[in-house]
Amino acid sequence: MLHPAPLLVADRVAKTYVGGGRAHAVIGEVSFSLRAGEIVSIVGPSGCGKTTLLNLLCGVLPLSAGSVVWRGLPLDGMPERVGYMLQKDLLLPWRTAVGNVKLGLELKRLSRAQCEERAHDMLRKVGLTAFHKYYPAALSGGMRQRVALARTLVTDPEVLLLDEPFAALDFQTKLLLEGDMARLVRSEGRSLLMITHDVEEAVSLSDRVVVLSHRPANIRAVHEIVLDADRGDMMDLRQSPRFVEYVRTIWSQLEARSSDG
Image (cartoon, rainbow, N blue to C red; front, side, top):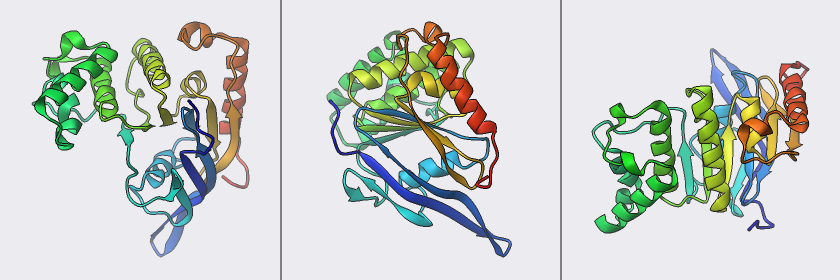
């Protein structure tokens, strides 16, 4: 169920680094919001500062200007009930799949029985029940990312922040994992903010796509994504006329240079 008030509001967020006796602006001035139950992707030219922006929004990096508000409160460190997933799975090689998924629950000091039950249930949801005793070295790249996703989801985050989580996967594995993740996120009413360089991925998964300019990054466009095909079938979806038009438009915006880039 969608809530009327946004979970996240970024207002004129900016980031500047000082080096070599001069200031280097990475994020110019970015304002947008994330609503409850919504999937938003941020795309932009390579090196424009997408990951920097994500780190500003969750308190990993300090702001140079502007403000970030989570659930009506100013940002003060990493917000509660926020899960952060990177391109690298960062699984602990000495722990099994279920052991990796349990890690966050153990840090929250849940009982052993609760950790086991919730970790196994989440592995079932990502389709890895049969591999719960496998160590990371014995898992494929797609399986490792499913374990990482399960580890992120098992602590019950309200919002997921994803930084190009599927970039290293082959095309078929990527499509399958994108579809599974989107269904899982939507069925459980979570919100998702994702950084990606893949325009097709952004359009196929998202309710909105935010397009950034070249560095220093500003918002060039925001697209509300309304598709004429079933999001459950990624291949059919990507062949629909409206999907193709969104992708063409966003690519043209990414390639364009203007005074803000």
